Image 1 (cartoon, rainbow, N blue to C red):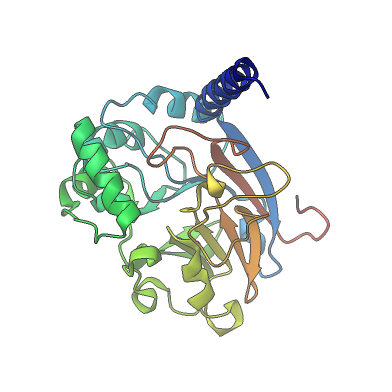
Image 2: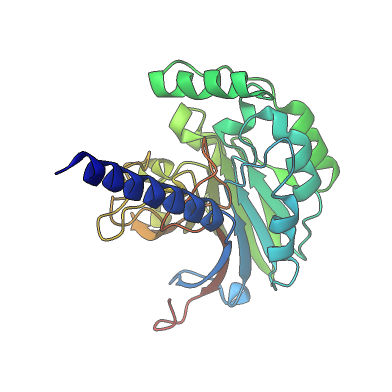
Length: 302
């Protein structure tokens, strides 16, 4: 091939790369509402049709650029209960932005949340700090965590129940419902014995990393019937027809990086998340807000 041909080929590849990057940036803002009906055979009659808004991995930046987009996608939705499964910020520099967004959430039956490891991460406010933060991750260096107490206090003051390896009970439709919240299993923060409610009633578990579901008791042994989590971002970057190179979970596969899984009799919903980590790009993997309807009527699951 001639020199001019090589230059033309390189130029074409460069242009294709620019187009792909611009598309991936746009896709990271193209939020979809994913509606699912989950068939749970042990769902009590009083919970039939319960609608849960599932929010995960918002990764709000310190600038708050995505807060408006987040709230706009939620306002018109109809739901009874909100469950949030962590990584609301990329680093603790985003606590104020995440607080501005999450404290506006309301639901008839309340808002319940657990935390992810990013919610503890040291603040990153400059480009140099961003490079250092991501270089440390690539090198596998231990993360430097800060106490999220100020962030948690702001959420709790707004009425959000933040579950940090603990559980709460509430009554819905005359039925006893217990909601547990475990720490981030990906960094060994999950204490499942403390987060798992005792037997009795209908049990839901919130946990950031889905692999915690692999260690939970079966529903018939007192484990949760429904587990909500995130962490994988659905891969964030997927190769069409092949799958996601990065998943950070043993539960999901290259081909299925998010969605509904059955683990030991429990239904596990893995959100592909609203935000992005490390780079503001998504490819073949749009951001997601989940709307889940519970039923015990077979044949209605989707």
